[in-house]
Image (cartoon, rainbow, N blue to C red):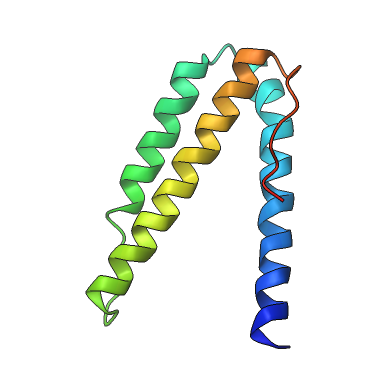
Length: 97
């Protein structure tokens, strides 16, 4: 596989996972009575934990960039999930695909 096809496959997988999360969020969080604000707080907590990940031997600048990208993606996903909870699942989610 070429790098371009690997990236295309990865993007498709991420898009599918995002679609699943945004589809399930109103059902799971909403039915459990978890507020949109708490969904966002959960995402922020996960993003904060990502900042503590250390990979021994990794270039510090590359590692920090990876942490920042992953933390941002998690926070964005949970923010979008919170929007879905607010809308009660009636809003058309942006699957990012």
